[in-house]
Every structure is written in C-alpha cells, then in structure tokens.
Length: 187
Image (cartoon, rainbow, N blue to C red; front, top):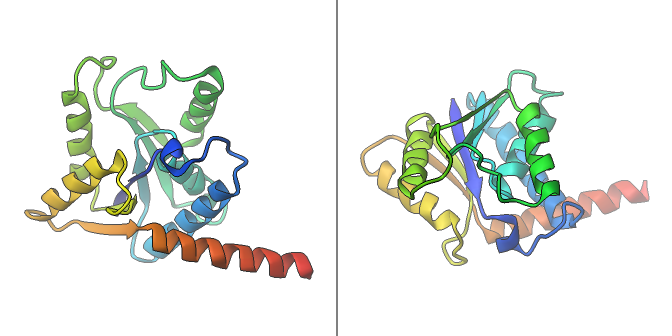
C-alpha cells in the first residue's frame, strides 16, 4: 500500500525553525500514523518535498526505517529544480532529504512553467497511491486545501482512503507527547 503524505507548509503553522518544539510533535504524530498504517499494509510513503508537513513526513518515514526496514519513501517533485528559489540552507536540507529517501524523481521533466504541472503532479500522486495522510483542518485553510479538494473529488469515483490529521488531533498529540516526555524526564 502506498500513501500520499501532504499538508500545511511550515509558515502556515507559524514554524520558522526546525528547532521549534511543534516540529517534534508533528513528526511524532506522523510516525504514529505511519506505524498504524503499516499494520494495514503500508510500504511506501510519497510526498512532494514542500517545506513543512511533506519534508517532516519524509524525515519521519526515514527515521522509522531503523525499526521498520520494509518502509520506503519517495520524494516526488512536481517539476525539475523544485527548490531552486529557496534560501541556501533550505536547498541543502532538501538535497539531504533527497539523498535519504528510497526514491526521488520529478513528475514533470522541465522546470516550472505553468500551473498545469502542479495539477499533473496532484493527479500523479492520487493515481499512484491508495490513500492519503493529510495534515489539514478545513477550518484553518492553507495551500493544502487544494490537495484536500482533489482527494475529496477523487474519492467520488475511486476507493481511496483519507486519514485527516486536524488541529484537534494535533493538540491531543502535543498534550500526550509532552506528558510522556515529562514522565520520562522525571525518571
């Protein structure tokens, strides 16, 4: 089973540094979701490499490989030179992630030249996965609303699962995560 992992961009969550504690909570939440889905047959995680949920999700999947060597990850860029206009530190992180995943490729073989490339990428992700893990809350719109809409439309004619991690889920995960962390620190 393959899933498309996507969601909010880092800035949409007011996260501007990897050292922000929210990143650790999000990655932990994603790991828990991936472990649960592996019990249902998950073996590939596909993501596009956007700053935020997609990169943290691929990092989480890569970190899980130590305990779950059967789990594979793919960085599927919408187009060539995807990270070209990012700051140097973000480009370096992207290149390191690209080297860490099981597979990496671009859906479009040219640099960005029109919005159709993004629609083609979205279609590729939908047709090459059996479900999606989406960190998104319809009450708090962001760019992930496009993926959410595409998934909902795709579900009208296809058997396609959607695991939606909304703000309530993230808040509960954060509370549980910090309770466990505090208990461990006291021991």
